[in-house]
Structures are given as structure tokens and as C-alpha cells.
Length: 530
Ligand code: AHR
Image (cartoon, rainbow, N blue to C red; front, side, top):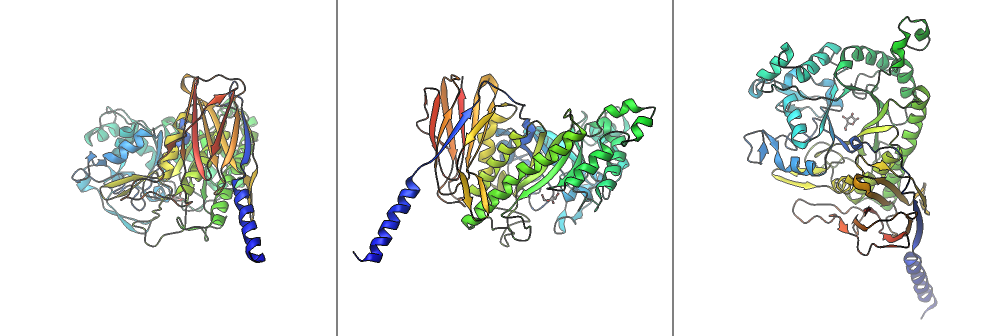
């Protein structure tokens, strides 16, 4: 054998060995201890009038040949119901800041036709308005989160909307709703005051927004949990100013002087919100394509996703100073992957979800669990046909995305109690990226069942994991794993789903330990039953 060939063969053998050498990790699950409850609303969704997010994706109209109940497509409702979608935010997004609710009530044929100036000047029929949204929410068994219009609306308009939705039919506003077909008041537990008011919601400074919030608060407080919007990623000054000016009825200083100082003990915010999107890197202008990306793109997407942990930690630290008793929640009202625009996409911001999206979702949800003390809600952007969706439609066809499977796998965490874990795993290092290879979350749910979610961020290497259950006894164990050969494996409308999670074979607890191989680029959930 020639020398160069020999060197090549040896190098090949070494690299094969290096690949085969298992990467080891250990996990201790302190199954007898418990942390905070994981609010089911962390699994919430976001729907905006954008592309086919509403029209076609949810709303087909009563006369459609696509099976529907009162115009809302039945295949999509069934899929969302199956994963117990807990809460849905609507009507936007930037669209909410141009939306006037009166355009979307009353006989459909008489509703004004509009133009969606927030998203590509697409025609807006207003066929899907308040009654249709509330019907959707009720068909799914979710809760409603409406965002009121601050940039082009008024406190009076928002107040009238809430009266219309929630007052008894014996009142003027309730009677109008009843005439429009709904006698019983709707339940609207969550009300967002505006959307991204530093940007499409009015280009406001944080101080100006905080003062606007105070005004909306004074008329909307009786209606539900108010959510102040929306710190943009690492804009910590937004959070600081908002809390300083709007957390209590009287700004600091005035409180002591006020004869009504006692009022100041009551926080005026139910939650405050944060918006943060994943792409590869940190440059909005240079995202990676949704499919056909490189391993470097993969790694920088994971790095960006992981930043959610730092953002929540730092916003929470500010909240802890103003609200040490943790009465105010944090809602991550928009999150998800936003990839490069695909010119061939059938509608605005339509993306094909891949295995990468599933790993982004698993990692993000684990981070939310880690911050369950503060994070009380999160809304994936967006539920159907827009950005990191749960389901995609093409005419009468519907498919579920890799992200949907993650929400399905993670159902055991909804409402469960977080369990402390300690993980020792090597880092995933590539140029400019240094992250833990594994992300793990554990919780105790119904009947004491332990749910473990394990996400392997490494696109090439499986990880041999030994889990120490600290002497806790379990009668049975089962698990499911979502992975594929390709980083951009994805479902297709005309083929079987390559990302359908599969049962993990051979799981067995021996001497209080569970050992398994966590496949490369995978999301896995294991359930241990007492
Ligand atoms: O989700 C798409 C858009 O992203 C929303 O309308 C806006 O709030 C955010 O910038």
C-alpha cells in the first residue's frame, strides 16, 4: 500500500473510532424533591392574521368542502385538541395594532372587507372575528388571550370590546352579542395591552408605553389578567422602566405621600411579556434557510435558542427586585424559529419545519421549565402555517410538524411539578459555539409519574447516558424518541411522516439506574410510573 493511501486508511479508521467512541453523560434525578409547577400555559399558541395562519389554516367558512364545524376546520381542531393546547393569543402580533374589533362582529356578509396593512396588504374578509375566535378556542378546549389595539385604538374601544365579549346578555353590550348569536358571555381570562409597542405597536419609548399601560389598566383591570407587552429580547431597560412606572398604582416616591398608599401593595400587572425568535446567529438579516442548511447553521441556531435562558434569567432578576414575592408572571408571548424567507413559499412567513425545529422546541420548552417560578405562559409563533407552526395545511390536506410531535411528547410536563436534576455532559463545541450537549428536564405529574425530556443538541453524536434515580422505585418505564438521519428531515403532504416518534427499545431500571443511548439530534421523552 502506498504511504499516502496508508495514512488515509489509518486516518479513516481513527475517525471511525472517534465517531464510534461513545460520548458519556450522567444525570442525577432528585425524584423525591420538587420544585415549582410547570404552568400548562407554557404550551400556549399564537395566531395572527398573516399569510394562511387564519384564512385556510383555521377558517374555511361554513360552505367549504373541507370538513368544518361552523366554518372552523375539523382536522386542525382535532390535532390541536389532541395535544391539549391550553391558551391561544389572537389577533396578532402587529396585526392587532391595526385591528378594530367591530369589523369582525355581526352578520358575516355585512362585515367590511379590509386590507391587511401589517402583512403584505393581503385582503382581509373579517370573516374570522371575535365569535369565530372564541368558537375556535372553545372547540379546542383552550383559553382565550386577546391583544387589544393600543397604536391605533383607544382605551374606550378596548373596554367596549371586553364588555361585548364578557358582559351578561342582560346588559346593552351583552345583548348585542346575543343578537349576534351568543347569549352566554365568553370567557377571556388574558388580555394583552398592545403588541411590540417599541415597534409596530406605536414606536413608543418604555416610559411612554408604561404610562399608556396605566391608562388601559384603569379601564380593563376588572376584566381579567392584564399582560404588559413586550420586552424585545435583551431590552432590559424596557422591563426596568415598565416595572418602575407601572407595577404599582403610584410611582415610587408618590406612594408614601398618598393617602391611598395601601393601594400600592397590589401589583397592577398580571404578567409582563417577552418576545424572542430563533434564527442562526444573531443577525435578523442573515438567517439560514429552513432546509438545506449547514452544520454551522445548526450550531448557531442552537446557540441563539439557548440565549432564551440568559434572557429569562436577566429579565427575571429585574422582576425579582421590583416583585420579590413573584406575584407577576413572565409570558414569552412570541417565540419560535424564524428562518430565511422562501420565495417559493405558498404564503407569507410559511416555513417547512424540520428536525432542527423539533430540537429548538425541545430545548426551549426545557428552558421554560427551568424558569417555571416566573414563566407562567408562552405562545409559539405561530400555531398554523406561519413560522414554527404545529400544523401545516395545503387545501384540504393537513400535516403535523416536527414541533407538533415535541408538544405531543411533552404533554406529561403540563401542570406537573418540576423535579431538580444535575447533569454532567461534555460540551457541544464548534466554531463560535460552546453549549451543553444535552438539555434535560424532569417533572412529577399525575399519580406521581416522572417525565424526563432529553434533547441531544449534537447533530452527529449519540450520547450514552446513565440516569441515577436516587433510590426512587418505579414499576415501569417507557419512552419515545424523535430523530432522523438528516438535520433537515421534514414531513411532506404526499409521503409518510419521517419524524413520527418511535418507541425507545430496551429501557430497564437496574439497581436504581436507567441507561440509554440518546441518539444524535433528537428529542426524547421517558416516563417512569410509580
Ligand atoms: O410573528 C410575526 C411577528 O413577529 C408579529 O406580528 C410581531 O409581533 C413580531 O415582530
